[in-house]
Image (cartoon, rainbow, N blue to C red; front, side, top):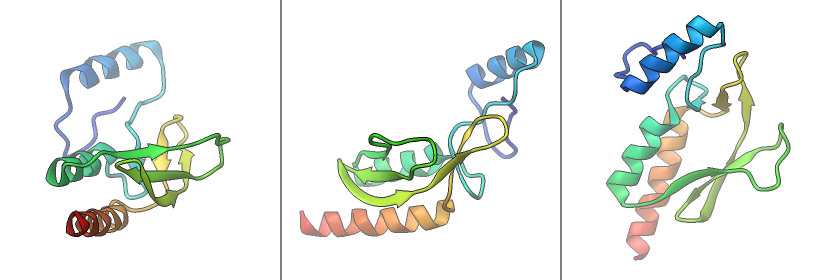
Length: 113
């Protein structure tokens, strides 16, 4: 559970990082995109800006199956994923790519409503 550069991490992260170090466990990182940007940084901002619910969903998936991203329950796109050497989830698209696609979907949805 290393502290990522350029991120202000919550206290629980620092406490857990110390526990993991003392126990010899691998570092934890929240799910992130291929470019290293944490999904919560992108998704929480989009949800707040567009008053939407965005979820990464795997339905009856096996480890190597793609997941999908849903906006307010509606599928928007599939997204591959894998685990890094510490077992943390990495989604196989850049944050910019996903942000742009979700913003286009959200803007289109706003125009229809």
